[in-house]
Amino acid sequence: MAHMARYFMDLAVNQEASMLLFRQHDDLWLCVPPQKCAKAWRTMQSFAKVMGVEFNKHKTGSVYLTSGGKIKDKEVLNSFPEGTVAVDFLQLISPETGNWVINEEPVDAHVRQLQKQLAACTSVLSWVQTWNSCIGRFFGSTFGEPANCLGRAHVDNILETHQRMQQFLFSGENGTAKSVAEHLKQWISKRFGFTNVPDAFLFMPEHFGGLGLRNPFNSLFLVHGQFPKTPEQKMQEFFEQEREAYKATKATFDALGETGRRHRFRSIYPAGDGDSDSRQFPGGDLDSFMTFEDFTHWRDSESHLLWRVYKDLREVPRKKDIWLSADVNGALRRLAESQSEEMDRAAALGRAVPAVRRTDLGR
Image 1 (cartoon, one colour):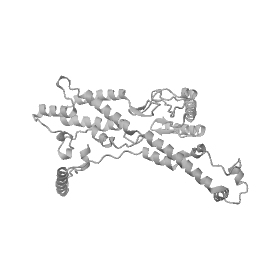
Image 2 (image 1 turned 45 degrees about the vertical axis):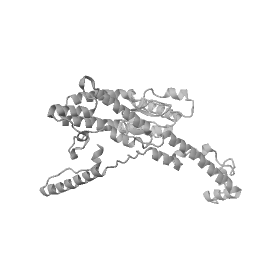
Image 3 (image 1 turned 90 degrees about the horizontal axis):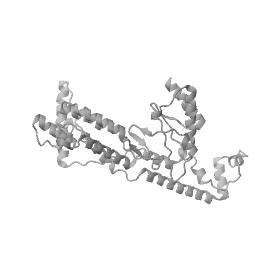
Image 4 (image 1 turned 60 degrees about the vertical axis):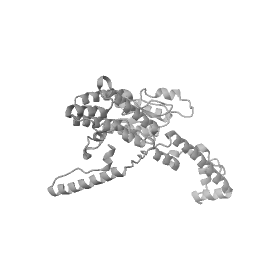
């Protein structure tokens, strides 16, 4: 029933505000110019009143983004719901920059909970498993995946948050460890009597005989330098290219001359329709090129330049390659060959052996 009700609200927003209402699970999103967004929000409120339902005020929020020093419409601004626009731990709190930043308050609460869970672990392996589950997977998804649309500032924000989290967990006070590696080494030394445990043993995956401890900084540093331009610079380039495209198209139009323009018109609207000139050009002006506003009016659906920059902004930055030394490369090759032989023997006996992958080094 809930999905059916939301379907009719989708339809109402589309009919009244001429826009799409985006849904992600139970979350509803409006992302359009402010005036249209205000009209859509009024439609949603009217629909909720008719259906006898209410929106979750704790999850409802808005942000009015402007650029170029444009003045906000106070009437439109006041019609928007109060609250912060957030996705997981990311929130959009800066109308001036439009940047997404990590909300530290829920992060701190989860880190305190993680501290209790780690303290309750009774073995090294259970501690590593708890660490990997929270640091490696949970925060890895709730902080948002690095993308061109978020830029390097987002990666910097994630790195700073991870650093702050680890400083809280490993304060170094009263003889405690100052890092996750130091903490595990101290634990191993006290429990098993082994000292001088190398970091490689902690971070190498289980397939290579290590503990498989996840380092959240590795994958982030591999993409940190892969943002040659900010999202704002990419969009500014688009606007400049769009302006140049308009000038070039207008110059082509002007160079056609009156005869060429009428020939071009007839190729688009074939002869036989006697009043096509007056219908397509009510003012009767076939010799003036369209304004820049008309040229860009349908950019959302017709501009190849916009589609190209939009596609680029949605991409995930390519990770920097890791070059292995000859010794490491040879050792991995020998290990893979030895495990391949072991897998062949295991297959003959009806057993399974996990395969070695070089990509496991990134864990």
